[in-house]
Image (cartoon, rainbow, N blue to C red; front, side, top):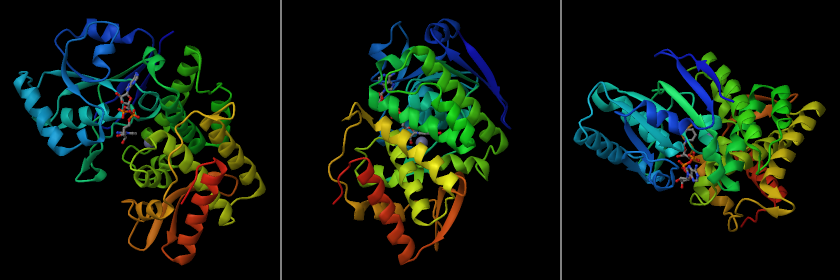
Length: 364
Ligand SMILES: NC(=O)c1ccc[n+]([C@@H]2O[C@H](COP(=O)([O-])OP(=O)(O)OC[C@H]3O[C@@H](n4cnc5c(N)ncnc54)[C@H](O)[C@@H]3O)[C@@H](O)[C@H]2O)c1
Ligand SMILES: [Zn+2]
């Protein structure tokens, strides 16, 4: 059954539709649109789609150089201000489409069809683009939401369990950030690396409706929405410190466990907070494994010094303080600022060591 809701935004609201068979509908309804498609997915699509712009889902393609190529391609295809762009793919294609649609002739209409669980349950709403510049991840970006987000659940079938788990971690993050009851409701949806279509849809709708509250309350990342960075500051350093061998969603899951360990080390949690955050960590750990075996690729021994270096360089920190989202008190999230000194450095390193030991990943 299809479900839909509206997200309001200052530049105009947009509709989100979740269901099956939407690819067929978007192709039939938009014969004149320019389709921009993940080049790995294009040959696998179950129906013919006139894919006129193919983009490889690589970080390297989220670059300003690639934006010039896309703009030139749009020009060659005769795109004008009335052109409708339809983008089909995961978060990389979303970033490329958001940015290029926003700059081409000062902005053209676009529709987004996310194809990874991460993009379906999280990034597809909120309207952000993030572009890498000379090795700096997500340094440049803007807000330019599509006119419509169409989530075709059928795309989930071809995702491997690592990609499913990565998407679930982002969904868990959103629900936990909203409140402990929301997280418990999320758990009751029956999250697992292998899920029925109904469960997948329930989780996506729950995560997006919850995220809708954050983005409508704080569209431009000034306050409440910053809590959605939970797991990200610690996680980005794991991604970068392993040369991106740990994928984004998985790193976010591990990053949430690190944040919990740090809060425990700092003595910030009440007994209720310890119980609630332990439930979150237990959930994250259970998602990383299946029947005792690992369902996500275990990286080679992690170089903690390098991870700490990457953590230090995170663009969200200020010159004399680290800024990160951590649980406090009864487990509610807060954006905390910690002085950059030996104590903090030692406790952050401790938190990484403790979290990685808990999930059985080696360090060196
Ligand atoms: N703009 C935002 O708000 C936002 C938010 C979160 C993440 N991101 C960005 O998104 C990127 C990560 O995105 P992602 O994890 O969604 O995936 P992705 O776009 O990086 O794709 C990951 C892999 O999955 C493949 N793939 C995509 N759909 C598939 C399907 N249905 N079946 C099988 N394989 C499929 C792709 O070809 C690729 O190999 C990062 O660059 C991250 O920075 C952006
Ligand atoms: Zn993320």
